[in-house]
Length: 240
Image 1: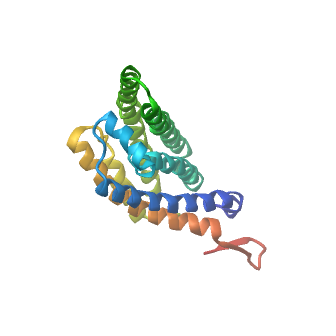
Image 2 (image 1 turned 90 degrees about the vertical axis):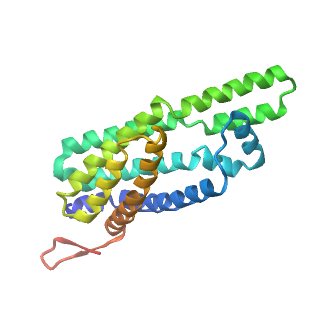
Image 3 (image 1 turned 30 degrees about the vertical axis):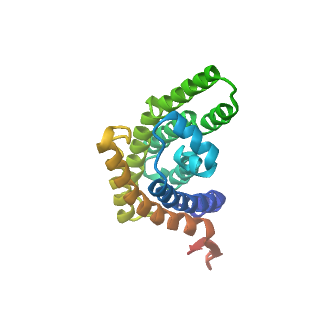
């Protein structure tokens, strides 16, 4: 990157570094909650969990994964400005697909619908009203991991594949970082909704993604917080 570009987008790189750290915190927390508290299997179990422990219910309903994806949208923008000199057209396609996938995921997440239905179910007076609310809860769960979710998963896998391939040609990121990204992208070729195979691939993809995130976070930190000095010839010089 040119020093002028770094100066212009320094605030973006700072925010991208901060949100990357946030995603690195969310992922292990999500794993811990899933390992301690089993995922509800029925609508009524979901309603009960929201009434008993709303924070755990938020984790299971993927509210924090939604937050994670909003952070990733910012990360994609930082990727764009660090890699656009490699192949701007291809990178634009990758970032666009990633953003489309994130938008699909946000629209499919049922966290607050389930919370509202749970509260309504808890205060419903008759059995008929509760049956209607239970049916609405079933509809929310069915729509949660349907077409929109699979679209999000596949599109973000393609976006990550494009970004990682372009990293292989970049002087800003090293090839080790790019390979970790490629490993995660390959494991994301099968959505987590595809039965036991999808779940295994989904869990395995977290390992290279986590390492990948740590490595590109270091790049964002350097670009966002580095000190700009001036050389004797008057040209800007960037120091880590």
